Length: 297
Image 1 (cartoon, rainbow, N blue to C red):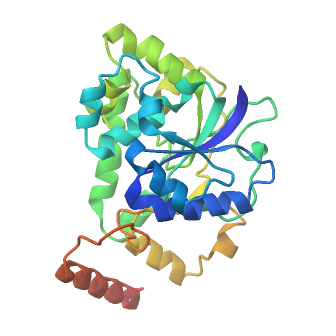
Image 2 (cartoon, rainbow, N blue to C red):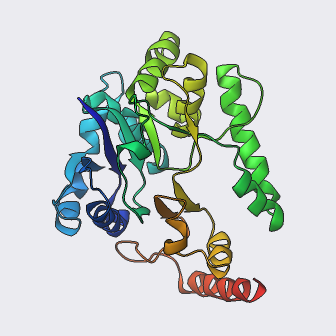
């Protein structure tokens, strides 16, 4: 079993983003860490054609989910993608490929070389992304988006109540993050299964795979806790991206601090695959708002 691999779960709309991610891995992976990419079986041919097979091992999402016999496959197929994709990511460990994996989103890409030492201690223990969302909270406070802090606190309280933890509110993301199969195994065997639950039940109850992992780690201490800040610079909002770039944040500057960049696809639509379903009016409104914000900053 390998020490660590890179893993991304994607689907057809993000295939061009996945191609960009794969190209950045080919450029910035001197240790040749294996890269696994999964998508629905119906999308595999598309991904192999556009992403290419060089340095990529393709898997079907269904193959990953099948590794957990307790998951009702019909119920899984009926779930919205925002939930089902979290189940797939959380079940990758069951394939027995590696002790740890760097879980990536396809809207991310590397901007400098990475190696095992960026993800594991010298003893092979994975670093845990763990923070208090201060950068995102600050962005919300400056721009009077009060709901950002409220939503963060509400999510933290929900998962903390599930585990019976009190104290400070921690975030365990954003992606990419390093996950240990031992933490996932303990979450399943020590917490979910005794309550008659599996990962599908957990994600339906509270769809935040990063928080499930982080709180399980704090509860069971399956591995040593080596907390680190976020590995990639993540732009959660378009306004955040515009303001940061205007202040001089470029990939050249960011690579001094980060391994890569994440430009979230929920607002950055330039690399969407297929027809843009947004109406012309919606796209015009978005363009106008962007120009106004640029003037303000």
